[in-house]
Image (cartoon, rainbow, N blue to C red; front, side, top):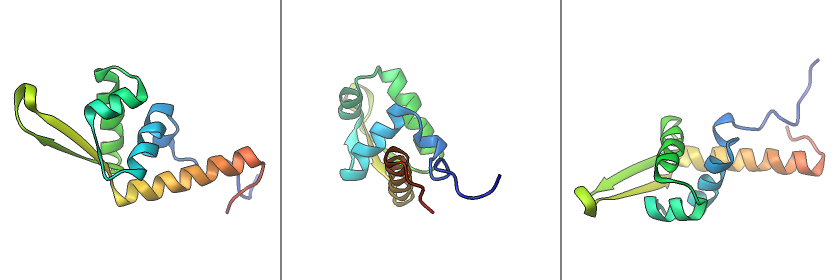
Length: 103
């Protein structure tokens, strides 16, 4: 079977709902700290850490830590590559929902 599949544009790193939701927020903001993302997604700290580590590993998110101990702040920012990947994934999802295929 050849041709273009409606699934071709989907990014496995963004197929997980929590990572997709995080990228949706980060793609529209200059950045977000750990607490904002945790509250936005409604997940535990360990779950958020796992999801964000996956996005950092593929280069879609940059992480910055400031301070030490209880006063430390972890901030995440979508990279240029991450924003592009999110846009492609979103376009593919829209095509699937509309019943069209993108090339």
